Length: 229
Image (cartoon, rainbow, N blue to C red; front, side, top):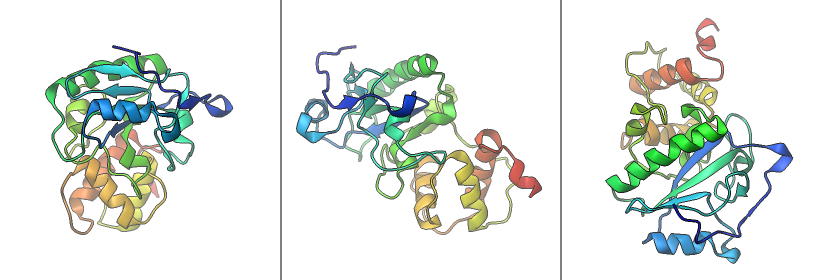
C-alpha cells in the first residue's frame, strides 16, 4: 500500500458522523494514473479514500477518518450527506470491461480491514448506483457482487423466498427498507437489477419480487414486518 499521492480534496466529517457505509465506484478513466491525478487535483474537487489499480495496487488517497468527496448527491437509509457517512473505494475500470483478478483480490483483502475498523456490516457495502440511482451506474453490471457476498463482504439474494404478488408499491417499500432512496419504479428497478440481476430488462416481475423480498427479510430495516401489514 502507498500514500505517495495524497489528495487535498477532503475535510472533516460533519456533525460527528463516522463511516457506516463503504461505497464502491469505478473510475471510468483509461488508466489508474489518470484517475489518481484527477482524484488528487485540487480544482477537480473529487477524491476517494482508496484507489485500487487493475494490477492490484492499493493506494490510500484520503485518511479514513476524514470526509472524502466521492459520493455527491444521493441518500441511503433515508439519510443524505453520504460523504460524511462513508468510505469511498475507486476501482480502476472504464466501466465496460471485467474487473481483473488482481484488482478483485486486492479489494477482497482491503474490505475486511475497513469493515473491522469501522464495524461496517456487509449490507452497508454498496455501489454508487445504489444510493444515487438517478445519475450513476457504477460499479456497473460487470462487477461481481456475488463473489464478495460469498466471503461475507456484501449481500446477495437467495431465490427461495416466497414473494408477494407483483406490485410496484410493494417492491418500492421493500427496496426502501434495504436503504434505496425514494424514487419512481422506473429509477429504482433498474438500479436494483444492476446490482442483483444485471442485464435483465422488462417490466417488474416475480423474480424481482422474490429477490427483493428475500433481501428485505434478511437485511431490511424492518425485517419481515411488511408481511403482517
